[in-house]
Amino acid sequence: MDGGARPPNRSLRVSPVDRLGRRISPVVLDAAEGIGRRAIEHAERLLIDPAVAAGLLEEAAATVSRALAPKKNCTQANIRDLPSYLFRAFIRRVDKIKKRQLALVGDLAVPTFGSGNSTDPQASVEMKILVDELLARCDAKTREMFYRRIEGFSWKEIGRSYGISNDAAKVRFSEALRRIGEKLGLKSDL
Image 1 (cartoon, one colour):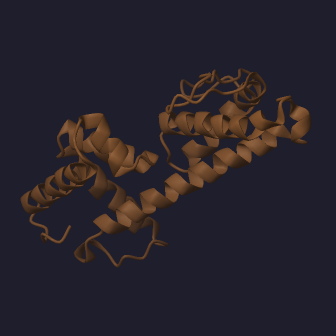
Image 2 (image 1 turned 180 degrees about the vertical axis):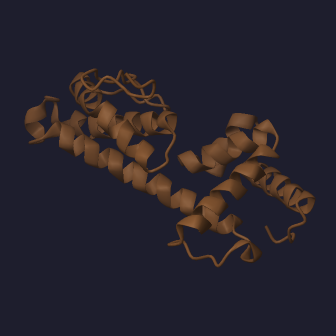
Image 3 (image 1 turned 90 degrees about the horizontal axis):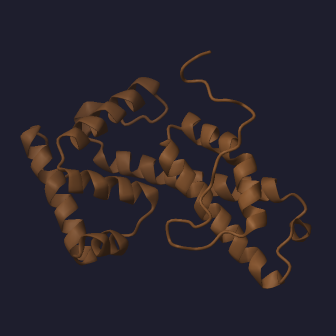
């Protein structure tokens, strides 16, 4: 058996609470665990980290739970196909994260490193390598800020997690990118 292969019949364990502390109803939790493996694999094909994808699934499940809560009887009867509904909510979150990633990579793009044509697979790989190189030169806090932004955290949430204001978090991140750009000999308009 291949070391990277996953057992096809085993469901994924989903936390009953998302990262914001919102509870997931038992019915929705069962549906999330049922679609979990397929959802994570789908996100991985889009180059999204499995841990980020698991968090997105939990967020989608918490949101669906909240949508069902006012209906008193939180059963699958309120939605014809709860697993499909939940998977679609998950896909919306994955799409949102993917757009943010692309926007962030676009913001980091430097004209001298390529044509800027996102349809060119080689340019896309080169941009990913560049971003990875930039992150490797960042301190741990800056990397954490970067990943939190990709996950959808606001600057206010990021600042709160470090005990600083949202403006201070933005400035810290921008300054770190500027210093890295200077070390790499890039223009200071990063």
